[in-house]
Length: 175
Image 1 (spheres, rainbow, N blue to C red):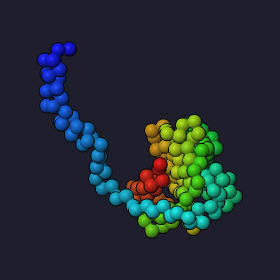
Image 2 (image 1 turned 90 degrees about the vertical axis):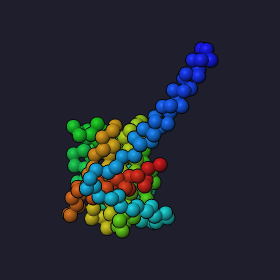
Image 3 (image 1 turned 135 degrees about the horizontal axis):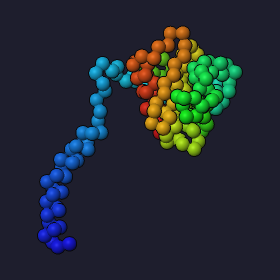
Image 4 (image 1 turned 60 degrees about the horizontal axis):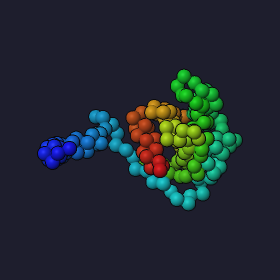
């Protein structure tokens, strides 16, 4: 390559480099859709003994007698078998469990259990939230690029605000 060709390429980089950098930076920020509720504040409460009331991790929580029935109702038929919605059973998303924690979301405390499918942690993670009083359960399972949301409780409705609550916990607990 001649010095002239090198010079011509550098001129092209100098001319279009800032434009390309600006486009890439602008593409990384996506505004929420109109009318979307703001993300609630999430605080991870360190050293809270309530984190272990159903076990020390998601696998123990799913098997605990006091939580098992509510979790079964939360996931329905997806709890223990593959369905048309999920490529794996819901329980598989907690096969590689992390320690349970307590999180405070918008003033309410939740027991949070995270995990993932052991052979696919980067593409198949899961989150289970149980309100401290046990009255509400929420979950998010990411199945290879598709997020599935679940809610169970007397007054639970899967509204945009509820999805924002689950997603805020998701972001706070992701490594």
